[in-house]
Picture (cartoon, rainbow, N blue to C red):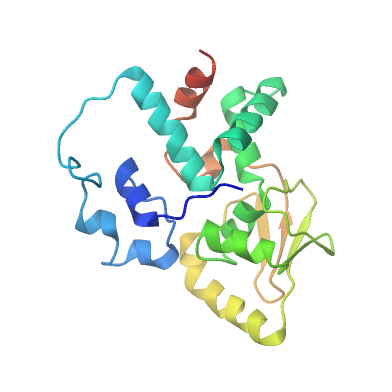
Amino acid sequence: MARYIGASCRLCRKEGVKLFLKGNRCVTEKCALDRRSYKPGLHGQQRRKLSDFGLQLREKQKAKTIYGVLEKQFRNYFKKAERSRDVTGEALLQFLERRLDNAVFRCCFAPSRPQARQMVGHGFIMVNEKKVNRPSYLVSKGDTIKVNAEKDQFKIVSERMQDLKERGIPGWINVDEKLLTAKIDRPPKKEDVGFPIQVQLIVELYSK
C-alpha cells in the first residue's frame, strides 16, 4: 500500500496549519511551523493567490493528511456519505472520526494518529474484547475500545495518557483512565472534530 514517507512537518507547513502529526513536538518550540511559517521548497516564501479549485483541493488534501487516508479510500468515504441520509459533509467527517486509529488518538492513548495507527496494526487494541488490527475499522455506538498490552507497555500508555489529557477528549467517547478502556456513547458530530476543516469545500470539489 502506498504511504507518505517524507518529513511530517513539511505537510503542516504546506497546509499552513498545525496537523499534530508529530504528537507533543507540535506544541513545543521545536515545531517546524512555528520556526518557519512559510511553505516548504525553493519558492515557499512567495505569495500565491489560490483559485476556487485550489482552495477546494487544499482543503481535501488537508483532511486526507490529518486522518492519514489515501485518495481512493477518501473518495469511498465520500461516496458512502453521499448515500447516507445525513448531510454529506457531516457524514464524511463522521466516517473519518469513527476510524479506529482516530478513536485511539482521540482517547489520548497515543500522542498522534500515526502512532495510534501503529498501535492498532501491532495488535495492541481490542474492540468489544476482540483484537482488531485494521486502522480503518469503523467504531459504532456502544462499542468498547481497550488497550491490550503487557504490564510494562500498559504502564507506558497510562503515563503517556496523563500527559495528553490536556488535549481533551471529545464528548462522543467516555474513557476510563485506570482500565485504559473507552466506550463510544454516540456518533461524532461536526463540532467534535477539533480541526478547522471546511468540509463544504470538499463537497463542492467532488460534486463537480
